[in-house]
Length: 134
Ligand code: HEC
Image (cartoon, helix red, strand yellow):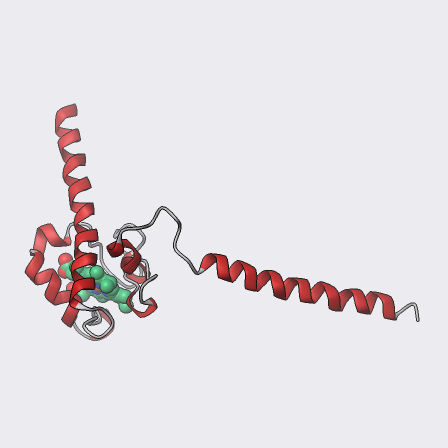
């Protein structure tokens, strides 16, 4: 009889853990409330999980294990080339950028390009500030 009480407690405790995990999962699956730009929601994978750019290019476009830095990609390559890279991919084999023409609509590709351009803007602001400081 005495042995059954802790066993019962263990079962109840486990159900709590399971319930809590579902709750935490539900919280983590949505975007933070301040993230409203459509392009940012795409970049971080909240619109289509398969097209999560941050998975490879990092949270700030700084690059990661699977993708290069892309903070200045639009300035460097031009908007037409970047549009083509997102829709049709780039490179070969393991180091290839996947194509996203099936995961993202043309309008969504424009939105994510617009988000990439906000980095260009802040980059040019930074260098203006740097020049002003010298
Ligand atoms: C599975 C990993 C992966 C994902 C997801 C991914 N990329 Fe890439 N991306 C790459 C790799 C790898 C390259 C480099 C390809 C090369 O140069 O051969 C690249 C290159 C690029 C470039 C060109 C950089 C340059 O200057 O040449 C841009 C722009 C870009 N990605 C944007 C995006 C956007 C926007 C998304 C989300 C819609 C995205 N990527 C999702 C892996 C990824």
